[in-house]
Image 1 (cartoon, one colour):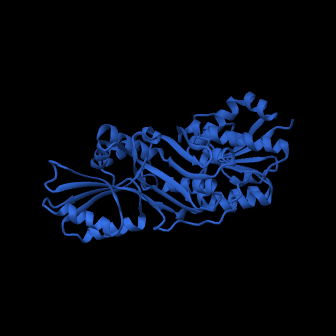
Image 2: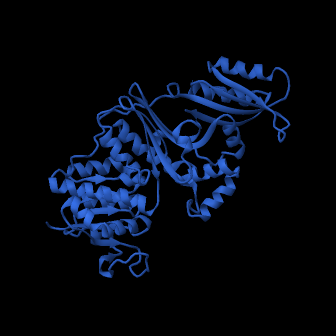
Image 3: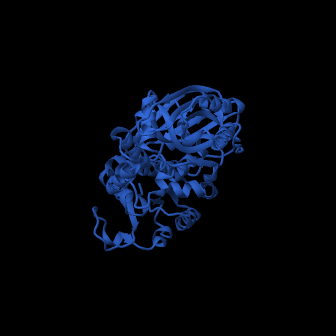
Length: 428
């Protein structure tokens, strides 16, 4: 059988892993697809740079069009990152009938529908398993494994950097600033960590998962986002006392055809399996109407876990090529997108208030909750030797976001409340 020739855009961490797997597992790949798989050309910034893996000099190029326009290359594997220029490359590749495997979450979150439409037009495959949760096969699971079910909720830790930070804060009682610095020194966080710590990276992944899970075109701006930079070690200590862990969770929910998506630091009950996912690991919990509760756990980033997902997609493309069914597996977003209003979005809340230490304060606070029809699950006042004011912890029953916004706005005007210290969603 004729060999399958691959063009690789990018030879960074993941690209290096892809070369290692394709060359190191050649006999396994050939037994699965019936052909030799050859990395024909590799796009790099500097062809003369020394690397941890050996690629023949004649196979490297610093011009992407050498690869995109090579008629002998069947499949483009994109692991270079970037958005607008990369989009141009991939659309051109699809125009030329080349299939695409990408690990680019930013590109797929922002331009996924356009790229998939172009693929369908030219009967090409576009697979992007590695764009979410590294080595966890969550995209294939949502698109194929749950194809006969109706997904009600997707909840996940989909950013390893923030999970590392929150885990260290929980286990060691360290401050956010100290752990962030350590994460940067270890290479888990970028010099500018904004995308990770402010939830933007997780939001892009949740837009992708929401589109797949709900079969509607979810845009990045549909995801409500709040990061972890305001999470204090005191917040985590209170959570632990009450039987919770704090995690940055992406949450996508469906109810009566209306959907909501958010990324926010969340207090999750310690008995929930996601609460025990620590360090840089990822986990995605999926609740299907028929199957019930399922969870997928594994390495969310790194050279080999992510490269494994890329090569799995590569194998899937080649198998389709042999069967002559390329371009027929794209997820069709056939449902109208109906976003929940703030009145329809409901969840439990944790609120920590610093208040005047005098009689009647609690009565005035509970009166505000009653006024806006928010019922309370528990109210706790704990002495804090570091705070001369009284501290009141409140956990609500399910309450609409609209009602909670009104409560918090009212609290800002209430003279007995010195400070609204913390507000978190509660799950599990």
